[in-house]
Length: 164
Image (tube, rainbow, N blue to C red; front, side):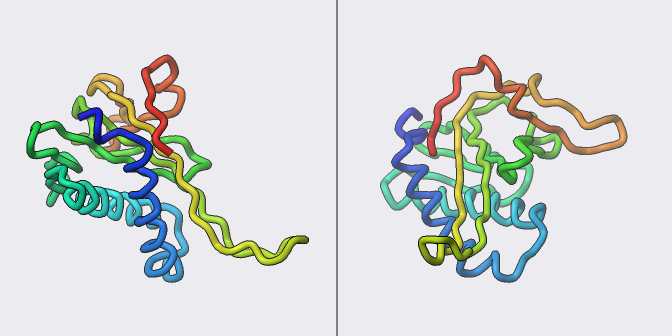
């Protein structure tokens, strides 16, 4: 599965997601929480399409019960979590607690702005890492809350592969 978690692939996927989000999604959505959910879904579907297009047979989840990506030739799975860049916390439901390879993505939306050097166009910047997370490493958010989270602090000392 090492051929999946390489920067070239994830830079290409980020470019595809960026184009769709800036053109078709972000002009209509204002809340970062909603943008993160939509970006997460885009990363799931577009990464599956991308890997299939380069000959890596991939299945994209149809429900929250399924892993986000399943690589059919090896039966390996990958979970994708997305958050706004300021937060550095990736949240998910209790099903997110599965032990798996994760791609953790942070995003920052930069509005078009006038600068001393001219107009800087609107942009969407991503950072993405790959890390194995064991189910025991997920932190619960309390007894009365369904969600779980991973923070950048949880990742300290882990073997992290920088993708973007």
